[in-house]
Image (cartoon, rainbow, N blue to C red; front, side, top):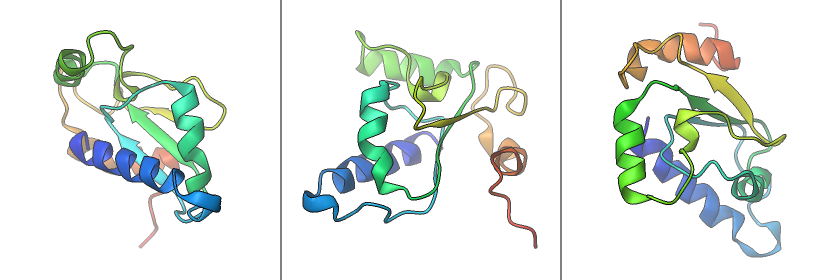
Amino acid sequence: VGLGARVVWHALQTLAGLPDSEAAGLILDVLLIAAPVTSNPTRWAQVRPVACGRLVNVYSRHNPALAFLYRTDHPLSKDPAGLGPVDSPHVHNLDASPHVPHGSNAYHFALPAVLDEAGLLAAC
């Protein structure tokens, strides 16, 4: 969540930059939760080929810590993907706001509901 999503995002960018589509379809599904990364649809389209399954942006509109930290580092950018939907047909957006306490980044409590809603919760 958060920093981990940023690490995954940078790995996706690196894989997407490999020559001759070496990484195309390398990863099944990508779930980025509270991602402090760009919400630019063009950038998301660039990493999309790496995932043969879904590219999921899980966000909460009520995460003041993410908003503050991202804007501190990117003062001229739009909100990060972790605060709202990415306007792209390549991205499945999932609003986790109902599952995350208002003003919190406590996604760990919401994870089962988020995974279930994303269709990624495996039945045991």
